[in-house]
Image (cartoon, rainbow, N blue to C red; front, side, top):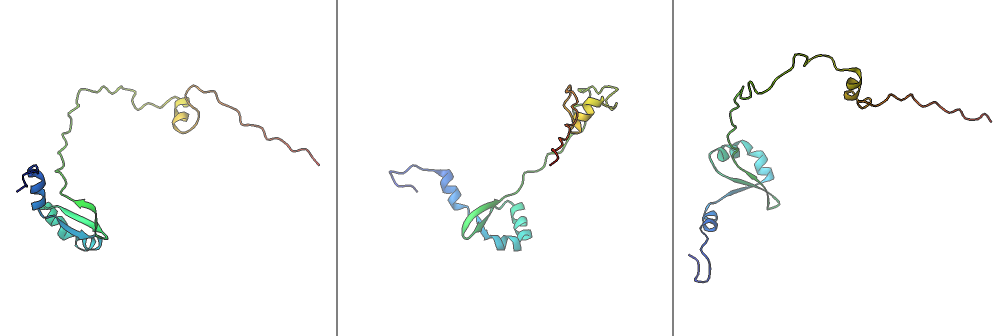
Length: 115
């Protein structure tokens, strides 16, 4: 119960009541399977390094099931979708010239004057 000058904080008091298990990194690595069983049951595990909390092990949220075909009829794939690309666009994708750029000739090697 708070003293007359203190505010009553129910959430803070409830979190103090719940005991959170804490394990060293070594113990967590050694007993990971057991810790995962406890976490799956709803427990929260703190992993500490040199006595300082560094990680919190909690249960993952359930993975949502994917619904296939929800965009059916919303996209129009053209008939030439898989047709070969024009040469300049293909070179751009392969790291060559940018689209619309003119092709440059390689620079000539300069000869050193004979000594």
